[in-house]
Image 1: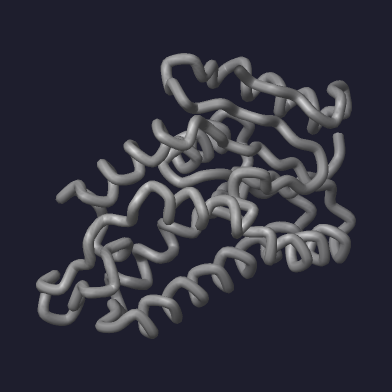
Image 2: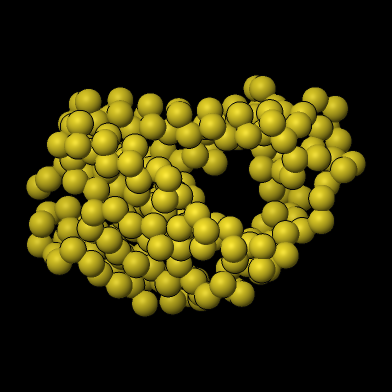
Length: 208
């Protein structure tokens, strides 16, 4: 069995964090999720401008990679969950090469309209953690008086495509179509991943 850096990647609002937690429990591999790191930092530090929010996001990414490297130093597998961008490929490849790890990408995709609708519902929900709020949010005074309007579908589509989010892939890859969540078979997906880690599956598998 090889040593794997497992990336749970893909579009937002496709169930990545939920599956990362499920996978972690099923295969006994620790996970690190950028959004959770960001929420912890926000609760302690907060932000009051777009610049501060951007810095919080960058710090969250640094901590995500720090946790991955700490685990890889021990020789253990690690799961990272994030909306990974093309610009992160170089750093991830370098990290894997440094510790002689294979990379496995589990790429969550879906029809753009369906994903966008779920994304907007999540972003507008009062249950959404404030660390993911729009840049108009004033975390120090608990106000959101200048929240900008929702991102239009075409702008969302352009962001996804221009950053390479929906096609992000490093190493062996499993594709997961989450247009309809009821069609995603978690146990079968875990079985595919376990097979790849055990070197018994081909490099690309598709979960319909």
